[in-house]
Length: 495
Ligand code: SIN
Image (cartoon, rainbow, N blue to C red; front, side):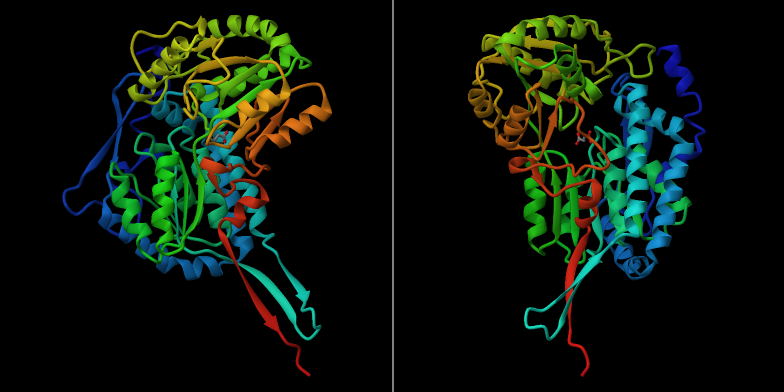
């Protein structure tokens, strides 16, 4: 264990933020009645068990839904300003404990500590944003065409929500769902990834501490996600599911939700094309690729999955990329100078090796491969170029620090290649030609496009995809709509 890790983890056992881990946080039965099961959280860096949390089962899930249903009337009737104040207080508290929370995120994910700090800051913005939105839930009034009545359209909270969150941003993705859900007046049941349940644990503690009433937020940490989501989605009292994760699981949840027509938001897989035209600024393009590819060890749904360089700029971009990728320090997220942390587990490691093998078998050449520590779930930061445009990796979301580069000649060809995927989450275009930027951005089938930037995630932007990348949007003003339903009242004025 390196000394920086030891120093950072020193207060771990006594941390107030991690109290009562094994009993779980939810009102109702605390444990699976069959036998007090627990879930071990392990470090992807050391392989050691770092915490044990309650392992909820079906009985716990239904108990959580009971309390979420019972709490709905009072919470939805709580004034918007009170809900806003609570979320604002949660935002302030998260900023107070930011360093401690970042250590927890770094420990459970293996990501670089600076990135964990960035995640806390990013996630906290959703608490503030939706505190501000809570008091701006509008509606509209229009006159009926015959002039005899008023049509009053108003928003209401959708009802108890199930929020299923991923391991890659275990704090920010929970905050991005829970903040609009609560702001809109809903009660929630959070089911975090079993690989990284600790950050959501801290967020729930904070929410309860700052005044969210009992029953409004429940947390179900579990090794048996199907035993949670199946019974909950089969129960008509649950009115909404929001999920971030794989397309396969999203499809199953979508089907389950359809039984009772529960509302769904599904933020699923991505296969983002990153297109660089000859007239782009080389330095900016390289900076964009490094960010879009290697942020969070390549484990983001919006990661540059396929990099397309136009022939005239390819050598210049590849020369810089080769140097930069080879120089990346892949290390324990707690280590000094770490640029790229661990990947989440050995399956992710194996998948990255397969991606490189497949790309090389198709004619690609490895231009750079960084060093990695001897043990732990690390993947060398790798650059493979010369992969044919018609890639054998079609539809394969890499989710690791492996950059795959192809060369193209003209715009039409690259737009066709970019759209040759089932996914449609993010995309990136680098060019100095404004007309081309607009034209290509609008020709690529994706929910989000970055023009001359490798970072599109923003609290003020509606994050989400099309096609197999899912439905619904998170963040921005649109994000709260996902937690509301409309109704209208026809008002005939008295005579
Ligand atoms: C994701 O990977 O799903 C989220 C990434 C982000 O918000 O930047």
